[in-house]
Image (cartoon, rainbow, N blue to C red; front, side, top):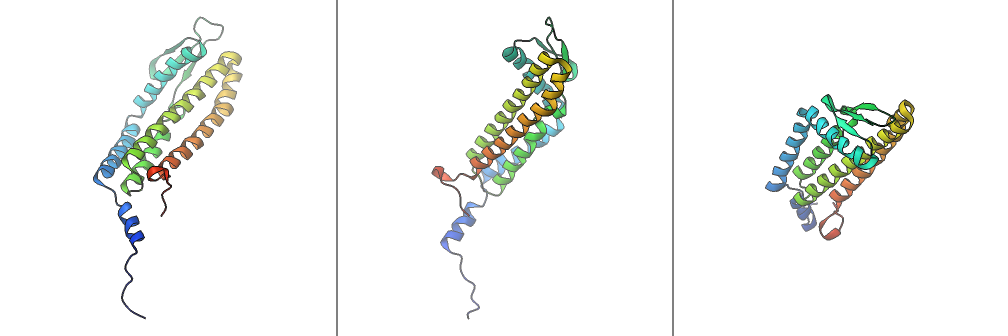
Length: 191
């Protein structure tokens, strides 16, 4: 037996090189981390922005009036048979769901496990999908409330809305991980 250490194989050297983050990867990782922190710091503003989106989607999709008031409150159904207000709070927003996606993408970038373009694509697709899912959830809650009042709100908010968000979160997470795990030219990355 020899005391000489074995040299790494060419495959091991390529894997080690591939796992080192480049300067652009590290810069984007820092930017995504900063964006995650900014979303937490500016949480109220982000929720208000999302409430504005909901207030635009309700009349477009449901045909009911919707007016955004103070503190992210949306008044729905003015001039119709059902008038109610929805207060959009932290639990109604995707902001805190988006923060982990940003941090996961930043970690993958910082370890060199994902390219800059792939990370940008995954984060953009994930953010858009999460927002679409959450907007659908709020639209369903508003539609059920318009149709069945408080009972509709209860069903829409606790059961139907939760199922929509959980299914959307699972699909978005799976999609982002699939995008992140893909290698060059469509080949899966192997360790």
